[in-house]
Image 1 (cartoon, rainbow, N blue to C red):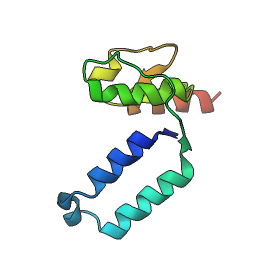
Image 2 (cartoon, rainbow, N blue to C red):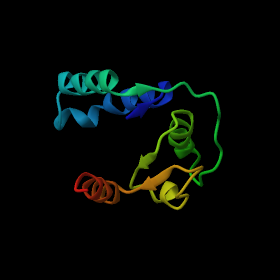
Image 3 (cartoon, rainbow, N blue to C red):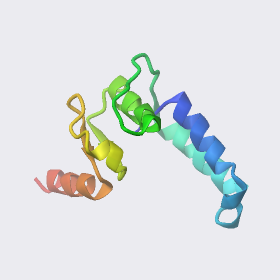
Image 4 (tube, helix red, strand yellow):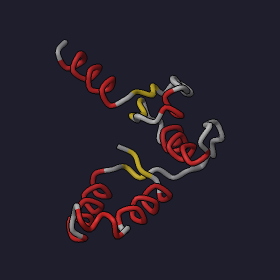
Amino acid sequence: MLISLELIQELNDVLSRRKFERYVTREEREKFLGVLLREAEYVEILERIQACRDVKDDALLEIAVNGRADFLVTGDQDLCVLNPFRGIQIQTPAEFLAALARETSK
């Protein structure tokens, strides 16, 4: 799992929104972010990408390209239509899990 500084900042901003308070506590959100930061591999963005219809999604392509990802797992159709992107397979979560299941059953 790859992450960038930009994505960390966006996730922190989103998780800080008041509307989430009725679903998960602040402590739970902070714990989630802490676990994510420990488990994910930080990617420095050296190459910028401008390829997606939704310019905000370019940040995810940047993480995948700069982090030399094999897969980008997303349900976002603006990204899915780019499959494959520079040799990176863009799959929905269902497609990724099905491929993973096939691979592990060999």
